[in-house]
Image (cartoon, rainbow, N blue to C red):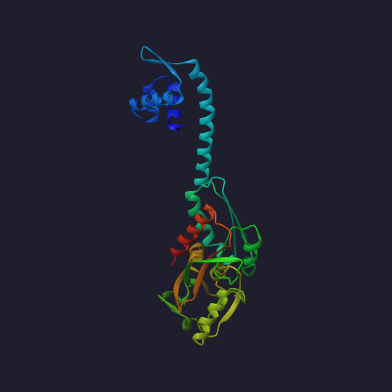
Length: 295
């Protein structure tokens, strides 16, 4: 049965006239009249008695109205459910990340997501980088983010972008006057570094080694934001991703391009073989937009 005919019938009953029903439905008056005639013809029932240009429900119309209201209420509920699904109302995404991405990418991507879907619920947990594949494959998480790639058949990798690390230093540092800082400029400079074994620690070490410059790691810390805080206290310099620097830039710090480039690939991770929900796809898109804004 045509839903538009049922809605026209309900609107006429509720408003008491075809004219007012047409205004409510944003239709023409002849259009509403046509729908009523088609409905009566389809049902083989006289729903309205026409008296002096007024419509009065017949007993059959009164009985049919009760059924119509129940049917349209069910349809309206289905439409509301579909709207909730489309707008991700009540959707819940569980994100696992490591400390390097937790303070830059994840909050910025979440802001983009919730600007469009304000009723989404977010859970973020920070785990050791080495454990993320296990958490994605066996844990309750929908997506992972990391400055890494995992060769693990249990997880699917998707490269979002490759960032270039920037050198973070206090505004008053003697190297602040340089537009681009090379690894040779860091001879005898103390560095705040990721922990041993961290992929970014390996990349930074390779950059120093390629130039024959000794890497003086004064402090090891597990987060880029923490490294920036140590720099702000005058305890060394740090090479971090540009997104984390944006967060830390209010601490009296500046950033300069660094050569040779320390490349930091940012990837998202998903349980292998599991379909990606709409909210996962939306967050992935937001994360990609966030990361690519810093390239």
